[in-house]
Length: 86
Image (cartoon, rainbow, N blue to C red):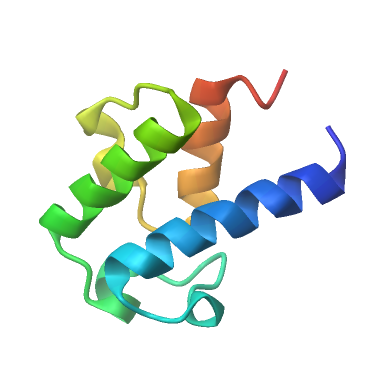
């Protein structure tokens, strides 16, 4: 997979996360912690998970929620579930 495709996917995920957290996409860095840096709570985490599942037509177990603490982690989990890493 090309870096351009990965960046596009990351940008799409950033948009979803920013919308749920009610912040500007530019405020979401690859390593900013959703809970500590953007005051995300468990309800917002579940909403992010639900939107990702709907958009990418994948199933992400709720047991993965604690790992989804920043954009990089969300991308990794989603990429595994969507088969982007093959």
